[in-house]
Amino acid sequence: MNPINIVNVTYFIIVGVSDVPELQLPIFLLALLIYLITLGGNMIILLLVCQDCRLHTPMYFFLANLSILDMSSSTITLYMSFTGFMSGSKIVLYGGCILQMYIWASLIGLELLILSAMSYDRYVAICKPLKYNMIMNYKVCGILALVCWVSAFLQSLPHTIIIIKFSCYESIKINHFFCDILPLKYITCSDTSLLDYLILSSVLFHLFFSFPLTFTPYIFIIATIMRIPSTIGRRKAFHSCSSHLTVVILLYMVLLCQYLKPGKKNNLDSNKLFSLFNTAAVPMLNPLIYSLKNRDVKRALRRELKKIKSVC
Image (tube, rainbow, N blue to C red):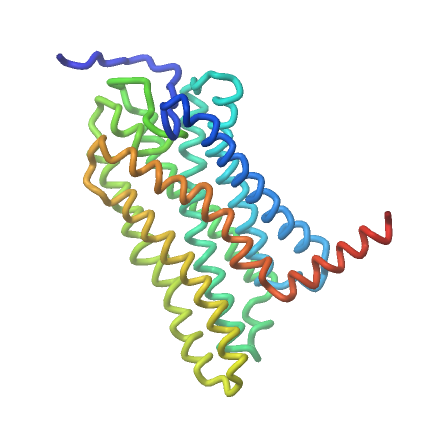
């Protein structure tokens, strides 16, 4: 039996993480807990960077950018699960779905670019400490951040335009917990060859451009660390670098598995797990790995808590 092609689509139905009724409440509570931890951790980092003048450095400037995009990516993807559970409605308007997909795709690319900028900042700080203030001045940091934001939102624009031009759909049910490119591609009856090419091009761009830009500085950083005479200093530097590299490698592996797998509809269930990692686990772990374990951040947090206590 041939599927009915729907031409004028005004809304979609989001299936969610699972369509089993018994799992809806546990999934909602777990997602809410992760979201609150993510929001709280990143909000603390952002407030500390803004309030404490000792954290007005390039490193924490990029960490503030990372916190903003982590909060944004979690909110833009998980809010639909929250509203769907509380209202009982899984309907999302066509325009809202397209907008969500565009913002999510842009934020994914932005995170990869911001991580590259952060690794370059660490390279200059560790390998060229005497020239650090000259190289990583406020103007350079601002330009780097602006280039990352603008490039990410421009890069995902062609994908969005192609999806807007899709003329019909075989179904209005999206087998996902938010609007993403692959679930929309799998339910359209329009030609997706150009979209497939763009997806592949984007993945290869980040694999052969963003990833080397992020990974290569750490090679020089590790080489510099090896020359540190203090064992404690080497251990501390290695611990910090290994944590950062772990997040970067995991993020790239998940994205490769998600977007370079064979294009089959039955892959969507596994794609949900990969998306959960990107939308929930990574934004929750970033504050812990990059900031909250940092000695300067701990001191800034203690100073702010003392100010609050003195006021009370």
